[in-house]
Amino acid sequence: MKRGEVDKNELASLILDSSNHGVFLLDKNKRIVECNKTATELLSYKKNEILGKEFVFYKDIKQKKEFEKLLKKKKEFSIDSEIKKKDGSVLQVKLYT
Image 1: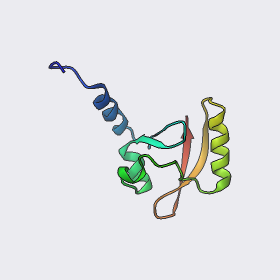
Image 2: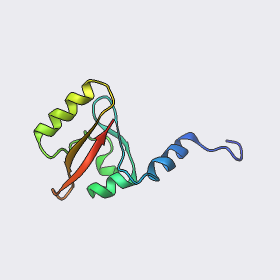
Image 3: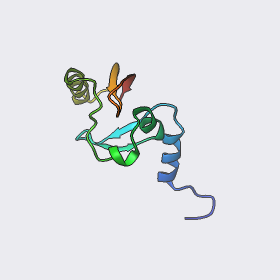
Image 4: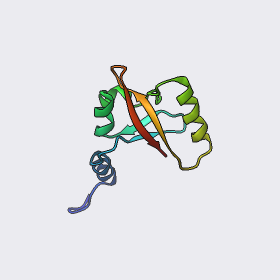
């Protein structure tokens, strides 16, 4: 890499980690392929504990089904929801695609 050039992956990570919002990037199987520091802090997980795992932080099965139904439509959406933290407590969030 030439002097003054920025690695695109490094830049993407810097931008992601600068967000005050918890961000999860999911693959087509709903597995977490990336997340930012805010996301791990909000849920009280370490990054290595959740990367590669399915997004399973739903409060209950009804919310999981609702979220998966919206994902299948492959359209942008935002919903108010609740997710579980590592300690089992519930956090009110807004989920976006």
